[in-house]
Length: 309
Image (cartoon, rainbow, N blue to C red; front, top):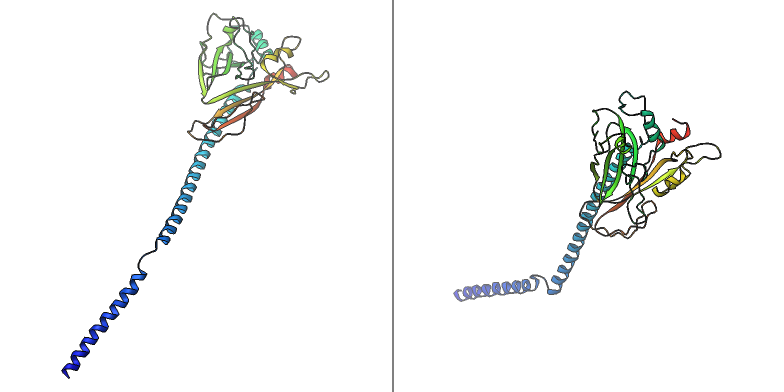
């Protein structure tokens, strides 16, 4: 009986050891991944990560582009609105205004401004260089206009009393890549005063790469003055369409500005830009460029031409 019990105990121990060895052997073959599986997993992970990075970069670039586009649209709307507000009154003169400074002959001043809403080089003997200029095919233009107002485009009233209206000459031009306006005292330029033309200039907008102007000429259709634009010409041809009495035929202007955004952004620019028929502008890849155009009717010049107002 004792031998039998000892034999059973030994059999149980051996059976347990054999069972443990079988489980260990089985687990040995199920443990971890093979080298091929690891390589496949790493490759898939890299592909997914690369795709996510590309999506992030694409979204980031799109966000920067949209931000730059929004900024340049805002700049364009601002400068066009500013110019329209200032230039719609070109050629205006109200000799009945209670605020008009009457230290000069207002009838002579009225005739001069209404007959010459746009200033051409040589109009003023005091400074013959003051006048609208055509920058030719490769250069920006200059726009100079006559108007009756309480201050120039720079905000200066020169030596006039605050709130008094007088003859001012506003000059819009491009200085490098800065769009500027310079104000002149019209009475000084006409020789009515000994001083007063401050030539003060203010910056209106940065990052402007071109400024072009065309002048709308209105010629009679048959014997009737319609005030309609019959042709668009550059500044150097305006005088060729003057009326027999010397008054101008300009009733409108068409102007355009080429603006670049000031954000640091790479844009693959493949399209050439033209500003009012000027030479094509090859856009570099250092930013976003846009052309902003508008047509402005000189309603005072139109009224003077059609009804003599």
